[in-house]
Image 1 (cartoon, rainbow, N blue to C red):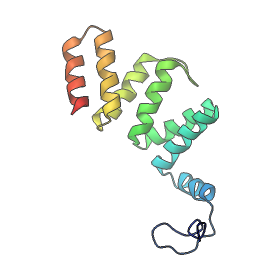
Image 2 (image 1 turned 30 degrees about the vertical axis):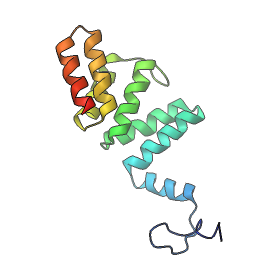
Image 3 (image 1 turned 120 degrees about the vertical axis):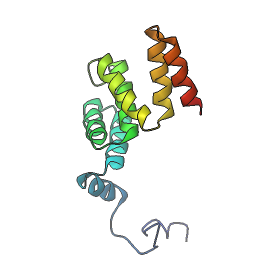
Image 4 (image 1 turned 180 degrees about the vertical axis):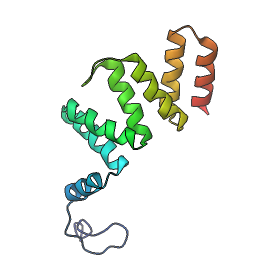
Length: 129
């Protein structure tokens, strides 16, 4: 009985032939930005940085907020891509505009590093709310 729900749809409980990996692949092929972002994060944890950047870039193009934030982290650290502060700030801004608090906080840190303390505080206040 414990494993009986594993092969059913979590919403309608009908049996499904499709594995989790097949479902993820189908969603990626359908250009689902959330699925692409999750695959990018998964590739990152597997150590495949080039593939991670590709998935995250595609997800960001499709408007996935978390993908923008994750790409900003890649660009600030140089993992899988060449460090690029302008692109990093672009992705932080896109994520912050869409309401990502971590991106807003990091944008404040970037402003503080550049000596724009008033703007930094504004970003931090928004991130805290």
